[in-house]
Structure formats: C-alpha cells, structure tokens
Amino acid sequence: MTAASGGGASDGGRYGEAVFRPEQAGEGERIDFGALAYDDVTMARLRALGAGPGWRCLDVGAGTGTVSRRLLDEARVASVLAVDRDARFLSERPAPGLDVREADITAPDFDPGRFHLVHARFVLMHLPERERLIRALAEHVAPGGVLVLSDAIDLTSERAPSTPYTVAMRAMWQGLRATIGTDVSWVPTYPQLLRGTQLVSVAAEIHVPPLLPGSPISRFWADTWERSRSAMLATGLVDDAAVDAAVRYLESGECAALSAGMLTVWGWKPER
Picture 1 (cartoon, rainbow, N blue to C red):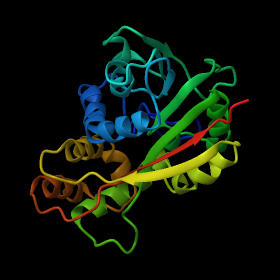
Picture 2: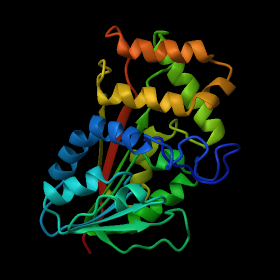
Picture 3: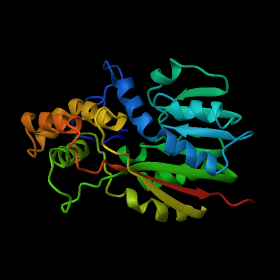
Picture 4: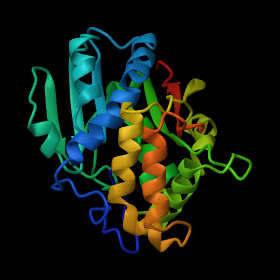
C-alpha cells in the first residue's frame, strides 16, 4: 500500500526507500497484509468487469504479485505483465503466464504495449505528475479494454472522533507526504480524471475493511506505523507513546474507528 514514491521527496529517497525499504526484513509480509485486506474485493471487481480467458493484463505496482497470480489462477486470463520498480518479491514466486518486469512507470519511455485490463492499486497516491500518469495508463488500454485504479481514501477528517488510531493515522499521512510525497487528498477526483482521458462508462466504489484485532488490515497499519515512525514523530502530532498506544488500541478489540478506505474507479476505452 505505502510502497513507492516518485521523485521530489525531501528525506524519503527517490522512491521512499528510507521509509519502506524492500530489503528490510518483513517488508514483503507487510505488503501481503494489505493484499489480504483488499484482494478479495479487487478480484470481485475485476471479474465483474469481465476479466477472463483471452485477456492480456497489465498489473502496475504489482508488489508481491497476489492480484497478478489470482488473475491467472482464478480468472484464467491469458497473461499478466506484472510491473514494479523493485521486482524482488515478484521474481521469488514465478508462475505460468506471469511476465515480470522491473521498471519505472514514470519514465518517459515506459511503453509495455496495449492490454484488455490495466490495473494499478495503491500506486498513484505515492507518485507526482498523477494526471499525466493516468493519461499514460489509459493509453495502454486496448480498444474495448478497461482501466482500473484503486487508491486510499483518508476517513480521519477533523470531524472524526479522536481516538489513538485517528491520531496516529493523521500523523502518518502528514509524515509520508513530507518524506515520500504520498498524497491521498486528490484521490476523490479519480472519476473526473478518467473521464478526461476519454474513457467511457466511468464508475466507482469504496471498500472499508473492519479494524479487528489480528486482522490483516490492523497488522498492516501496525507494521506501517513502525516503519514510518520517524516520519510520524517529525510532524509533532505524536510521540512514541502515542504510536504505541495506537498499536495497542488496534489489538484491544475496542477500536471504534474507520480504516482508510479503498476507492476503486474504472473506465472503458471505446471500441474503434
């Protein structure tokens, strides 16, 4: 979820490696916790959109490849090109029909071809030049194909009750924005941005997983806070005790808060 950023970040490195280092022990597991929280919803949407036999698919920012492999195993698509800036987790788990490419999607020469499905989840929220990248991804959709984008929606507004969880989340979003450039404030504009690329039948939905003790999403946030603790402390919104209290709150069974939601938007390339 919070895995990579484009250039311009002040302290997080070009792609945020100083915060979420791929080589750090447990990073693949952290990514998988996020996948466990959202993969079923993602797959239900992709299959409802028609992903199936004969489809060529592009999975951008594929992470550990859970969606890519489920497209092959469950939807029986013809092939998946899984792209990530750091493909170590993808390369560890090869599969028939899965082509892995280590690439930077922000590069001007990135052109993997055209696909029935172009999918990117929890990617664009970390990258600059978002409007340009959405236009570029739409260009990779073949006529009659579909672009599907998912990113996080922050539900810890000023009107949300103050809990250890919301305090930590506000600090996390602010800290990640300052260090690796993460910005979820623009995610609600996805439908308009897709329409601006001339895609049609644009629609959207939101999924909010429950924050239950030991659940994948609760473990994901606890791990994410630990890795981004320095960035969170630098905001001045929390101290170590507040971050620790938020982790305990997630594990208590008394967490009365809304997790960050996942907004999924899709649009179709007209047939020519």
